[in-house]
Length: 103
Image (cartoon, rainbow, N blue to C red):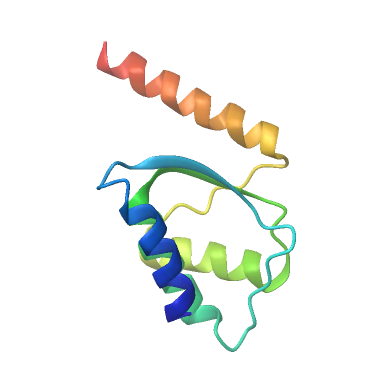
């Protein structure tokens, strides 16, 4: 888990604190129940640190369970969408709403 989180952290750190929007396709992603809690905590910290709006698609099994659980436990996004296209539409909607609220 630490190595996984370090790879993501190293990649996103280069954006120097600018929060991004992201869609994670978890179709082939698996989380073993033995590391689920630790993975969920690491996932939540990365989400809070680097992402403004994020959606997950195709999450199943333990990956979905630990994503939702860590979202609640650590107050991190665990939003899901039925497809990548739908996730992008939702992110664009959030951006429009955010822009409208600033006007």
